[in-house]
Image 1 (tube, one colour):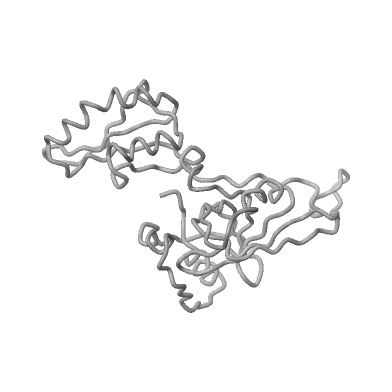
Image 2 (cartoon, rainbow, N blue to C red):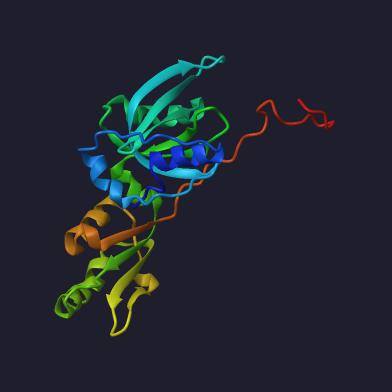
Length: 241
């Protein structure tokens, strides 16, 4: 639900941009990742696009820069393929502690920006988000889906809704999805029923409504702006550096 695309989408989009064909890169996905593969819709990915990919770090290679700072080359892998990730020093300092106790099977939401400028596509990795933190970090609003429920069950859930949400007060909007005689509609609840997007509240909602009926719309990930002074700018007199 928080993933923008699969690794396969990045590889296919990069190949399409270069006018190439790629072979299917099948990986045995008999684990947590492969079970979610069908949830992630195939997407066209563009060079420079900010993405969030649910993946594991199959390999981590730390390497020093010329200044002696550590950066990392990552193998970002999901059930559809693998792509290289590069994490520059400023961002590696921030996320390296998360990888200290991780294994090649540990799942992260890898947030970054795709780069098709090289022979092989890359993800410039700016952040790693654990599954426990992804709801508070990326949730834009929540839909509680009561469509296709028996009317009696709908009424029962709605009757308990206000007292439940009052315990979760915050800034994240909540909508209720219900059936009318003709349509299925999403009704935005009043602002005094907004919730705090915490991991604990997410668990409470899943316990009350069921995991498949708590739909979270992601606000996505915005890549940081590039810093100036990267050797490709201009001096004040207008001459190229």
